Length: 99
Image 1 (tube, rainbow, N blue to C red):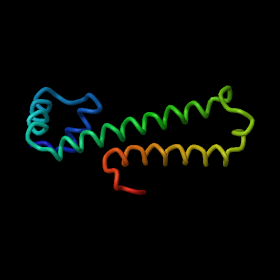
Image 2: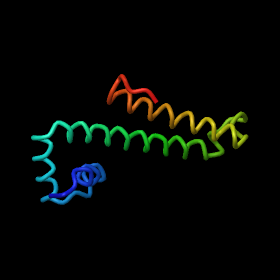
Image 3: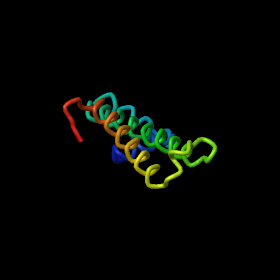
């Protein structure tokens, strides 16, 4: 049996083999914890992709205003954005969770 975390990651990355996909589908049917983990991993994957896109956008000099020319200010903005993305992900998983 393949590690469930590995199956989830391969599923999200679209690198899962046919036999692994069948195994993963059976796990999803029988284990609510695996379904919750899949949802969490998916949300984290989306949050990271959004952060990378935002970071790429901010690195493009044509998209920054004069206020973002200062590197420390830009880093603070990026850190705040990632923090907010992760808060959104975790609050959807468990509304009582606070970071």
